[in-house]
Image (tube, rainbow, N blue to C red; front, top):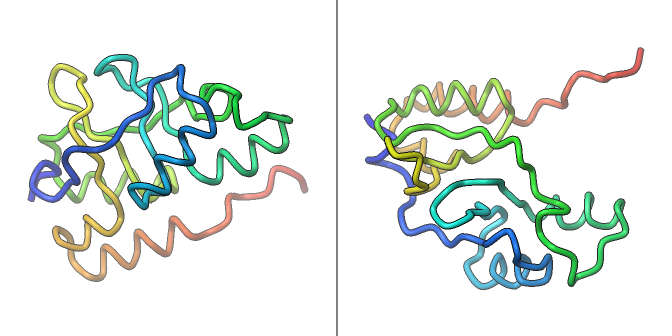
Length: 142
């Protein structure tokens, strides 16, 4: 099954000029824990509720700080014509719960989440993906 068949379409986005407060308000309004940040239709980052709280507080950001101060700019994405199994593999490898989906023109067209994958992969693969995503990253200290 293709990513385009199971992804969430019509995703709300933030502009790079949006504030952390605007990001949090939009997340609350649409009941989402992550939002893509786009400059026009070009994906430039992702911001999560965790980025706002953990990174934002650690950096001393205010609610009026730009979302670019807390977003992840190294975004892992997948093409809409990829297989859902490829999305599961990327999620396992990168330990992420959602992937922005782009088309052949690199335009954001949706998001595929771990929940979306349950429609397209076996229960075993979905379970393995969740298990791997939930594992702590290896410690950087001995």
